[in-house]
Image 1 (cartoon, rainbow, N blue to C red):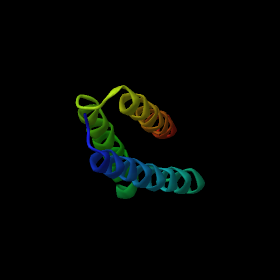
Image 2: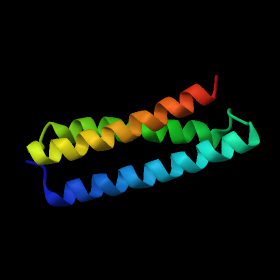
Image 3: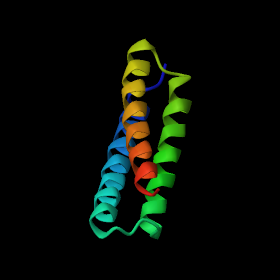
Image 4: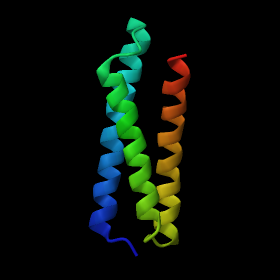
Amino acid sequence: MATRDSMDNLMQQVEDTLRYAQEQYKHSSLQEHYNNDDYTTALQQLEQTYQDICTMAHSANSQQREQLHRMRLQIQQLQNSMIIETR
C-alpha cells in the first residue's frame, strides 16, 4: 500500500502540474504561439506526472488506485487538449 505521505505528495505534484499546464495552454491559446519553451515544458511535466501516477498505482490499495485513475484522466485530458491545439 502506498503511504499517505507519498499519495499526498503525488496529489500536490498533480495539482501543481495541472495548474502550470493550464496556464501555458491558456496563454498559448490567447497568443496563438504554440512552440514556446514553457508550453513544451508543461507537456513534458504532464507526461512525467502521468508516469509517476502509473508507478504509484502499483503499490496502491483499491481506494488509492481509484483516486489515481481520476488524476490520470485529468492529466490525459489536458495532454490531449494541448496536443490538439498545436496542430
